[in-house]
Image (cartoon, rainbow, N blue to C red; front, side, top):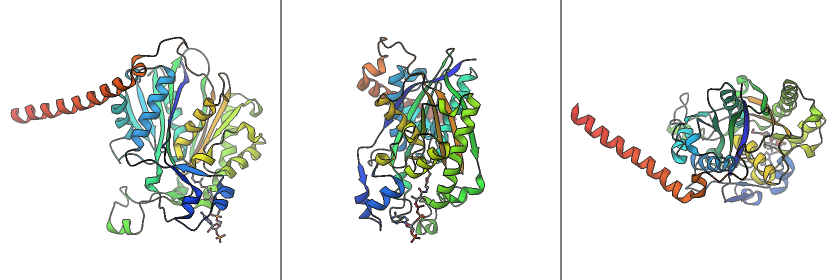
Length: 373
Ligand code: UT7
């Protein structure tokens, strides 16, 4: 049975920074309150020409470059998101088209902030079963578009961004070791976007009542989060056959520094073992774990062989954890980059041309088919 290794990683971080001081000009809050209650100092907001799919595609392309794997070799794309481009089609399918992953299946996964853990586990299981070799697992959000910028309970928290991992099959032991996935739908109302789906379709009234925006009972979510983070971490470490003190890094969902501190204290682990960057990006939901991982890799904190636990929680309610023995790229370091990364501009023209050509062919086929009928 092959192992599922994480061999590439990438991020897409919007340039536009929104500081606490700027939010304090929009709602009744202040920098000191936000910092002390959440640890957040600033977050990124997607520009009007950026979207969940465009951020996801950028992160995916960078992750594939690290793995030196051509988009054409990707078998499966999973995009975890709570701010999909549309209800359908899946954002993952749009990413497939944008990066030119010609033979990949693609679907979205909705498990809110826990989604990246679920998606990574699903991708790893597909690789381990032998049915696929290469998968792209992406967490991407533009939550700023679902945020009520008049609601101080939520608008201080969220930010935009994307992170992606490449999963590859190899007979070499390691990679994804174990995972815990849990849900408790009885808490669904604690964090939700009530309208815009099939239960409460868009109407004048839903718009008037601002039901298309994130609504949250922060205190209850906080309580739930502090309980499940330690619990899921313990469970996943036990399943992987390690002891807690053998874990090199815990990479938690970046929602609130206080939640992470509480989890560290519950686990009796030093906070230094936790990767934290919530201060600069806020809560990017499902994107937060791959974004924090990529940053830690950029600082050379994570090394091949390190034992890592990813742990998250969020709307659903959902929570989960996944343990990994870190691998890094399987490609030989001296191997030349495959062509999409040597000629990036040319490749992006090719991917766009390919997409346009498919549309033209579809139009011509439709015309011919219509005449026959
Ligand atoms: O990915 C999962 C997503 N969600 C989360 O992780 C959220 C988890 N929850 C939290 O992070 C925290 O509950 C918050 C940061 C949202 C709130 O912090 P808290 O310490 O739980 O505050 P609180 O809700 O208990 O509110 C305390 C006070 C209230 O005033 P009163 O009732 O004590 O007079 C709030 O009205 O703080 C007030 N408050 C604010 N004050 C200034 C609430 N939001 C703000 C604000 N600025 N932005």
